[in-house]
Structure formats: structure tokens, C-alpha cells
Image 1 (cartoon, one colour):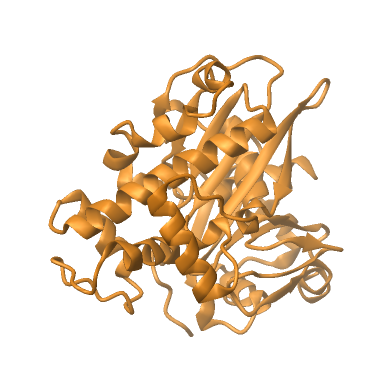
Image 2: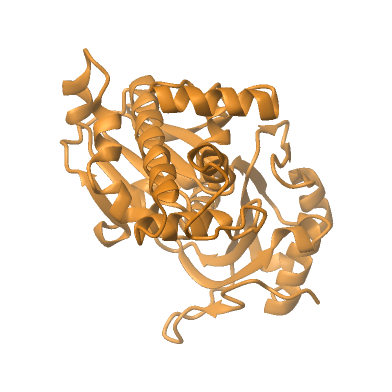
Length: 345
């Protein structure tokens, strides 16, 4: 049995009994995969148990699910619906993950485990399903704004990659999340330093996509152009921990090049969030998800992010009125998949 990377097994409190019919939710990412069993008896499904797996230590999603149901001793017949958020476009009930050599097929999952209903969602679409049920302690407000009833919501999340999604408000139905592959759209440089970065990305990869800037490896790409070969924090950019090390060195102000790299990252993140807000007309709010944002809250809160977000004349007033919030719940994608599964019962 492979070793789980975190939260090896988090059970619900003893006061919350397991129900006879459960939901299986999953958040399959480039670094880790979360699987959880949820009680569907409330509008916000309640987690009964959650396990975390190192994605690349498994051959496919089927292997992860098999280990999970065996460890939890749960009969597949007890699961009435399953939903998995996957980091890639979902086409015809299947997806090839962008940063993982997996092909996930809902029909194969259904055939193997005999679950009555299996759905795949893009991972940001799954996260978007969690937004309407998040509570105030689960978000950090960057801009209070004024959410308009009937407005749309935008979701953007930088982590191993960059994801974007939107929740369109439909009369009679409420918010309807839609997926996007906007993270792979072209990166648009706005400053002289970003032009230098753009040239480096084109030389290195053949084109510059937004994800090449706004994700963990993207921060490493920025680091390359803010250093002349010397780093006062002695960052090893070949290390998997390099993005975290760069941001920590920047927040502790141990290296001027790292400080500039994080500033450029935050500035570009604010600009792209504002771009998405305009495309969606996100008058009901903009939510910043992913693993990076909660770890760099001081940098996101110093004004750089919001200046770039709002700096889009002639529509500054529109952007100034939008609520902007960072999602602090690290399991928002998993929760969103459970919300969707509950809706399909």
C-alpha cells in the first residue's frame, strides 16, 4: 500500500454517524488527490471521512478509489453518487489530466465499482460548486464590494497549475458553474518587466500562457528573470519546494530578487483576476482559490493585487464594486464535488 501524503485519514466527529447511503467526492490534482465520503442529508454535504493521496504514486484513479473503499470498508452499493473534480478539460465523460499522465473515464469508474451515478467535472468547476455554501470564516476579504443579486461570480485558482471558472446566475436555477481552460490562454504583458518575462517564456516554451506565470512553476519562471544568477536566499529552483521557498524568502525579505518575483506574481495575479472578472461581469463576486493564495495573504493584502485588479480604465468603477475574496478552505474543490453529487441524487 502506498503512503498517503497528508491527512492520512480524517474521520468525522463521533457525534456524526455514518449514513447508510453516502456520496463519494474526489478532487484529483497534479500533486495530491483528495477522496471523501459525505453525508448528503443537508444542503452542504457533511464529510464523514477524507483521505489524501500522492497522485503520481498511483497508476490511475481506479487504483486510488480501490484503496480508499478498501481502507474505509465501505461497500460500493452504499454509494449513491460519485463526483470527481479533475485538473483538465472534461470531454464526453472523460478527461486527460493536464499535469498528470492519467486518463480518467467516468464510464470505467462506474463499470468497475457499480456506482449508480458517476460524474467528472473540471476541477475549477467543482470548486465553483462550493462557493454558494462557503461560510464567512472560510474566506478572507480583499475588497468588500457590494454583491449584486442576479450577478455572476468568477473563480480563479493558482496552485500546481492555473484554473478558472464562472458561476452564471440563471433565473429560477440560481448559480450554474461553468468550466474554462482560461489558464492556458496567452499571457499578456503589461509592464517592461513583464515584457522581459514574456520574451524569456517564449524562448523557453515557444509561447507564453497565463499558467506559465500564475502557478507554482510560474513563480519559478519569474524568479529566473529577477535574478542574475545569485540568490541571497540560496533557492534551489530544481527543488519541488522552490515555489514555497521563493515566497517565504520574499515575505521574510531575505532576497531582493525573491521580493521582486513575488511582487510580479501578485501583480500579474491581480491583473488576470480582473480580466476574468470583466469577461464574466462578476458583479456577485470574485473568489481566489488554490493552494498558493492562503500562503501569501500578506502579499495579496498589501494593495498590489487590488491595484492591478482595478486598474482597467474605463471600467475601474465596475471592478471597485465587486467583492473579492480568498478561499481559505483547502478542501473547497472536494466540497464542491460533493455538492454536485448531492444535486444529482
